Length: 226
Image 1 (tube, rainbow, N blue to C red):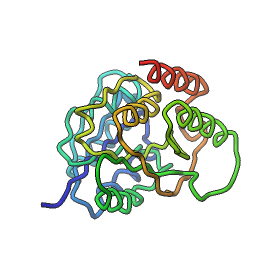
Image 2: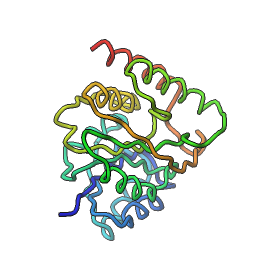
Image 3: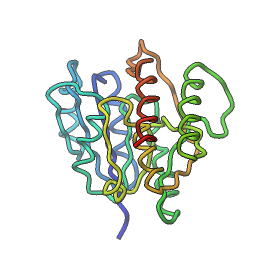
């Protein structure tokens, strides 16, 4: 029987991108289920999702108020039925097509393994965004003995069986370091493969803030101490 992947799509106020990004996910040539969590959007996102629902097969979960990406992801994970899961934002920064080789790669692996799509692996360059990500990734490697290049990547492909062992918390973006720390603490190896990335700015709707960087640091130390 072919393995199935559950694709979790947290969405908040993405009226400009959701009608573009979701069809790309639906078109992936994979055995999949798509679970969309509308995290209390206040723009036209709910109406656009309703229109897409008439043409595409996906599960829609609507949160009455905006709680944050972490809360939306945890809600979606309660409903998955796939053998693996991955988070795919609806903002077009990541290319859903990269999920296909990632899914092939993790199925070819063995044992307790997760696969991360790295935006920086084999890709030289520098920017403020990359420096911050490099610091958080380096701190993760120091605290948990890993050798990652992109801990904060959205594309984390993980066996669903891991959910029986890892304990996820966090309302906002701190769920990214928490997922990684929990995997490493429970003996999972994390491999990486390069992916494409088209970073958008705050004027285009980017929502992560400097405060989230501090929260990520605190989350990593909390995970190490616990």
